[in-house]
Amino acid sequence: MIEIQDLTKYYNDFCAVDHISLSVRPGEILGLLGPNGAGKTTTLRMLTGYFKPTSGQISVKDLHMPEHTLKIKSLVGYLPESAPLYHNMLVYDYLTYVARLKGLKDPDRQLERLHTLADLCGLSGIMHKPIVTLSKGLKQRVGLAHAMMTDPEILILDEPTSGLDPNQIAEIRSIIRQIGKKKTVIFSTHILSEAEATCDRIVIINNGKVVADDTTTRLKQGALQNNLIRLALKGPDLKTACQFLADMNLNLSVSALTPDMDDQVRVEIQGPPDRDVRSDIYLKIKETDWIIMELTKETQALEHIFQKLTRENT
Ligand SMILES: Nc1ncnc2c1ncn2[C@@H]1O[C@H](COP(=O)(O)OP(=O)(O)OP(=O)(O)O)[C@@H](O)[C@H]1O
Image (cartoon, rainbow, N blue to C red; front, side, top):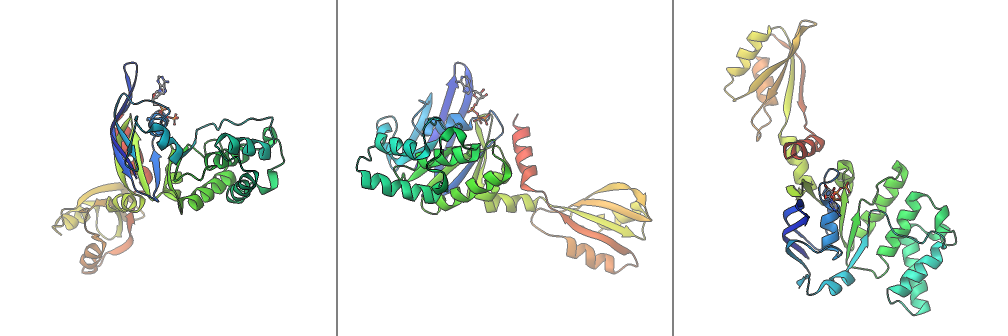
């Protein structure tokens, strides 16, 4: 649906987007995740045709930029980071104005579209309120309705939940998920849980480069494979416990967690990535008279992966 090849953008001699390539499938909700200044907005602006790339190719449904920029713009709804709204207008008047601007001239069709958008974006109760009186979350929903006016196949949202309170974030998330059932959605965020909760796929960018690109499920699985095992034992001393684990020949890397306390030895074990060695450890310890006080998998959350990827490349 969307193909980006070697997309690069320089601001003077500063490289904000550095040879990014990715493809987005129809119906996918893709999260462009990265810390502040990673290049998310710049990438989205090039994708929506508002910025010209320094180099690289963008195509949407086999239409190429820059030749077909206008046609591509007609397929894409865009919600910029701060939605430009006319604050002194009523929501209804503003959306009617947007409808006319977008070529929806017939009053019956305008009304029908406004009804649909009011339902989708939860605006029914505020259609006759001045925009200036709305909370940031409600303004964002009006911006979303604006972006969806022509029922575009693709929706691009730049930090749609930025500055919202947790309830407003949950509402926008649920609207995005609803929209994502029928549309292709790309949205940027610097909040991992945001991407994790809403997206089918996450592309992590840092310093203008793609540092990870995978389905949310696989990224999570990858994070889980990097597990550590915590073991606490009553019985042996630290040296004996470490030697015992080394003798299992499972290529375990063992490190002491804290000095012996409460007569317990506590260690952290890094096992092979493709095998959960807890059962091996349990069965071996069963042959002794030691007592297992703890044998748990310390799962490395996706958060750690994100931090690692975005720190390592800084
Ligand atoms: N018009 C500009 N001129 C010069 N540098 C710019 C311009 N716009 C952005 N930059 C720089 O390019 C880099 C990427 O900015 P961009 O806004 O794309 O990042 P971002 O990931 O969207 O960050 P944020 O989450 O803070 O919006 C940043 O270092 C920013 O300072």
